[in-house]
Image (cartoon, rainbow, N blue to C red; front, side):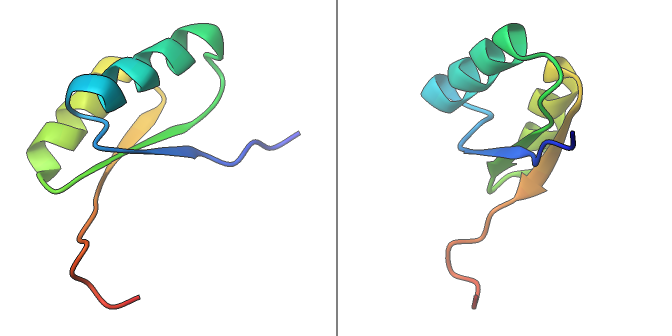
Length: 63
C-alpha cells in the first residue's frame, strides 16, 4: 500500500520539527515533507529526519 507524504509546515523549527521527529519515530515508513520559507533549513531538517524532503512554502504565491 502506498502512503502519501505528510506535510509539516514550519517543520524546521520548534513545534513543527518536534512533531515531525515524533511521527518519524512512531511511523518510520511514512514519507515526510518538511515545509518552510528557508530552503536550506528545511533541507537540513529533512536530512536529519530521514525519508523526508524539504520543500519551500511561499504563502504569497498564487495557488
